[in-house]
Image (cartoon, rainbow, N blue to C red; front, side, top):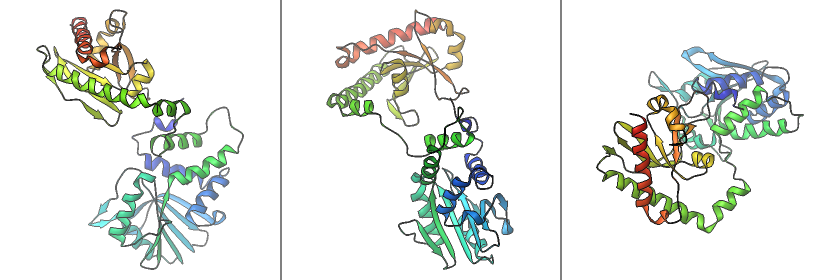
Length: 345
């Protein structure tokens, strides 16, 4: 089942999670979550008021404003995932917020950046450069001796919330709260978990050698493609960070192909090397021929969402001798390419 937030990706995750955090801190039924968040901020949850996307004086638009009932405490919370801080009229975003807080009558003023672990170094550097504040080990400091500065991490907040949720009786369907936790955890937090089977595979002494030779085969095939008379264009093999793939592209008869190794397809189709037809729209018009028994391609979505692009992949069969003979792998690949060209004419 996909997360609700998978469908809203691209609609400003920061704004969505900010609004959700405001909801949790305001509505009945989330007292434990609210208390956990207030504890991280350093305020009393029983005396907490919150507003989201508020426009303040000096043209300051903030993500979240926390305040105590009688105004003794005011805290601005800036929710940051991967976006950078902004500048307005030559003034840094954090400087604007800090100056606004200094103008307030509250006895306690707090400026907080809520972010993810891999962005902490960036946020610390921005605080150091623009606010001239050196944070301690708890990632806290003071601006002009009057405004507290702090960095909070989504990882720790999610840990507290997950701990609370695990003690509750599970419902048949995931709640919106569960959707949010799952989406942030899988997309932004360092939460990659290795199974026992993963560890056994990775710790096998032959695994490293096999993968290394797999890369060598791809590099050799790339050289074969560059020297083949029927290939119009060919790139050098390289890594694609987003898909964790390694391979190269080439063109034959105005059809774009890709050859290489893609872990997702390996896991799904049971083979490490693939030929991919890159021209997905054109391939769909010849879908029947490609997916038939003659060619045996498979449809694979690039991503998990239903709206993502479908690509057509065909595993390249490896025989024991092929790992040392890239020529035989190339012969099999170019033969398949020619059959695809004929099928798509």
